[in-house]
Image (cartoon, rainbow, N blue to C red):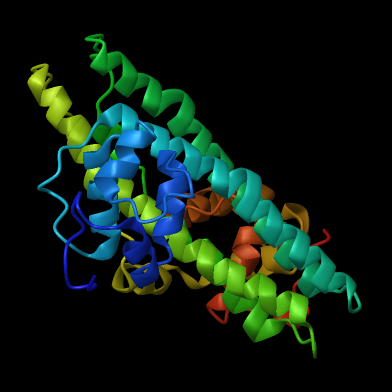
Length: 318
């Protein structure tokens, strides 16, 4: 079949996979087993008791084709999303970390390596918290809605307003390794970077499925239950906004970010900049709120990527 065509029940799974190998992940997350031979989508879904229209909606979405013609089953889609979370948290991200550690052990461990690993570990914790929140809170809310149990204090828009793409920091990790970690002939690191790029693409698709398929389906369910809609605050992550954000930082804020990146304590920052410790604390609180960065390692990475500090001056051990 051609990539310019939508996927339908009569299309053969083997031909679909030949055109788009990434559909393999969709099969496993919906519970479609291999060994399907020349079966069509409809035949394979029937045999494995998979909700066919949900599978077609997700597959066509990833294929860049019309997906709105298919009726989504929220239980089936939540099952897909849960398995995707398991893939990221239990397989893909731990695999990347193992490769990074092995790659770094092939050379002298230095401050750059320590910073990158710490930033990666902080990122994994953030992804873990985000996905566990979805598993434990968001899906619980939707399951209750399906059973006719409502919650006047919560709407899916409350979730969507805080649901931004998790790919940016992963891209930053890749850029930091490529731009600042000097090592020759390290095939393991190359493999890890390929995995990071793949993981970033998978996360982007995952977030888009939640935004374009899952959330609208839940909003439709809420509407059918005559629940009023909460106003959500849009969370934009455009490049223009990020540039404006950097430009909006005062010189004093940039000075403090640089000091944090260099490993200085609040007391040392206050002494160097001739301000009080209380003032430093206030500045750091405001910086964290403005940048949505809540760790010293995160601020160090921000400073490096925005050329506020030379990576040689960064001290991640303090």
